[in-house]
Image (cartoon, rainbow, N blue to C red; front, side):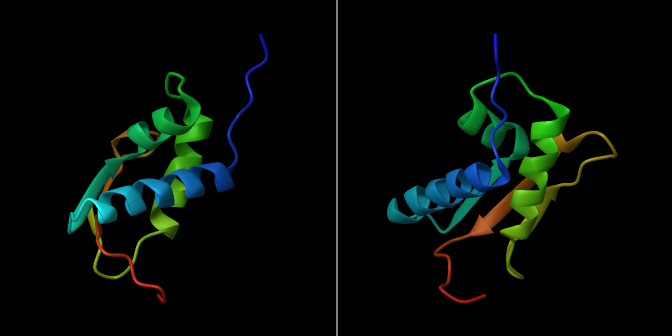
Length: 92
């Protein structure tokens, strides 16, 4: 069985899509864990490689008014949780 590992861009698109959905629902915050983003994109059990991509994407999407709710220990990317403020601004 061949498993295709999602790219960083696929994780970024999925996160932005999730943020847009939450914003359209009228929410003012959206909290997501790396493991949830990974599952959304890959549909597979966690993998250290994919979780590190999730972590990078989630951190890169952060703005100054977003909040880190859970900081992972080394090798524990699964526990990263970020609360993103909505609506997202056009410019950073």
